[in-house]
Amino acid sequence: MEKNSSSILVVDDVPLNLEVMEGLLYKEGYKVLTALNAGEALGMIKEGTIDLAILDVMMPGMNGFDLCRKLKNMSGRRFFPVILVTALNELEDKIRGLEAGADDFLTKPFHTIELITKIRSLLRLRKLQGELDHSEDIILTLAIAIEAKDLYTKGHSERVGTLAMEFATHMGLQEDDRHLLFKSGVLHDIGKIGVDNQILHKCGSLTHEEFCHIRDHVLIGENICFPLNSARRILPVIRHHHERWDGSGFPDGLKGENIPFFARIVAITDSFDAMVSMRPYRAPFTVDQAVAMMDQERYSGQWDPELVVKFIEMMREQRGFII
Ligand SMILES: [Fe+2]
Image 1: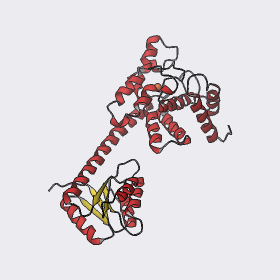
Image 2: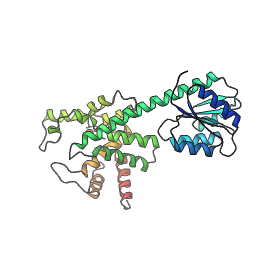
Image 3: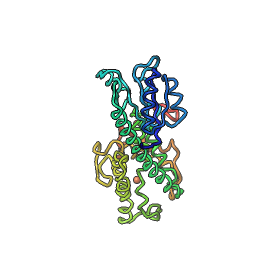
Image 4: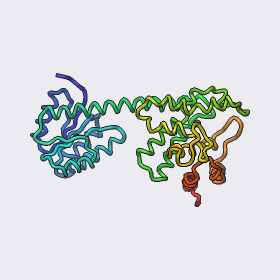
């Protein structure tokens, strides 16, 4: 028998059903926790590390659909697989289950092999997602660590990400997009790892070669993150955060709405953070000064003018101004 360390929570209001399921899963080497109702189940989820839940749909009090929805909310970004057990092969139940976020269904009566196959495949998915998250965490941490070495850039990308996320909230974007914008902000300049520090922080004007060298950071960054599956949606931000609304930016000279939306957002939060940060050649602007400058330059061709208006609106709201 294959031994494995995954923990499975089974919730059913019929004790005999729990016993049967516990026996089956135990034989397969899983750790099994059982609960007779949603309240008990929620307590167990808070306490320990459970990898998957099997929920009976028909339960007094909170039913399986509502419990499923609650467990999915509690797990946040981490993939927490839920299998719903239904008595009949009712389409309506399946639709309700899918709406509640269920990952799979089991219809009574079921074969042990069917149960075990579903569990194995969902646990494999959870493991894969965990590994992806891990590599993503490594690269995010690396991006922050690279900057921390330099007085002028310390914390810049994290602030750009945080501000981009706040901006997304202000615009009513979804949680997924807000999170993506945070990561995009953190990673947008990761390609600077491949740029000569002396050129990066040169006080005087740059030669054409030096300028080209700095410009390459968007392509280097894109290459660094390219193999990372979970960063696929971030790549356009890394590549295009220096495009300008008027088409005079780099690397592709994209213009207006051809510039990916998230890249236009990060271009604004990136510029703002640069303005309020110390530079080798100037003192930082205050937030009010930076907001006023962006307001004046909203049609300069650097940024999406409509987005700049929204950004200024957010900054002024945060600081108690009325636009
Ligand atoms: Fe950049």
